[in-house]
Image (cartoon, rainbow, N blue to C red; front, side, top):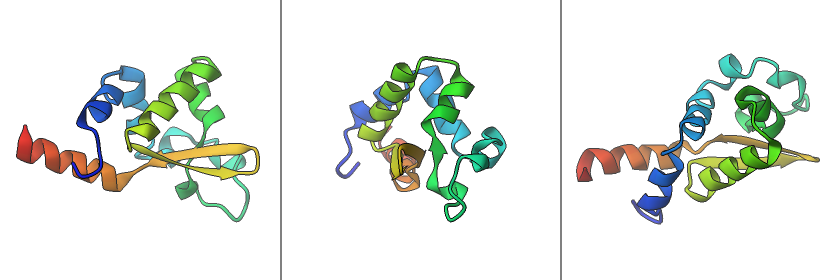
Length: 107
């Protein structure tokens, strides 16, 4: 995988909660229905899901959720965007496509 560390990717995917977050972010409108209330009017849900909404769904501490999201972002699985004091995360579909191709070709 160009510019990706396979071990970082698979390490990030080896935790059920992190895997769930990645699955939920595939359909943010369905899995985070209250999300729209937190986004500025000029920003669409494609901008990502707020850390607080992810934390509410997983029911873990803010520091644990932030660590998980940071680990997933470092692995290239997530992208983040900041609006004011809030950080929003979304899936990095380009990386996910590369991972799928890597698994198909190499494993």
